[in-house]
Length: 68
Image (cartoon, rainbow, N blue to C red; front, side, top):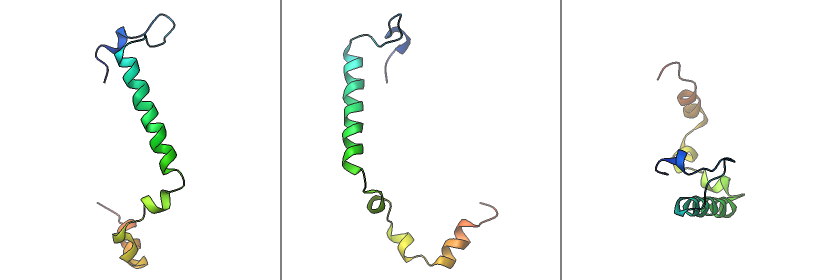
């Protein structure tokens, strides 16, 4: 988070050079790298053991509940 973020922007709406700006750029770079590393791996990352062993009927019962 950025303390008093409203003070960190110039008249044009751009963030002023500061340690806060540097940290935001660092975080965005890390997110981009993470995204690039995980691209095309969603099938592996979303594969769950509990869903593989669950039968189609059990899935239908769980998903089609009328109330929670």
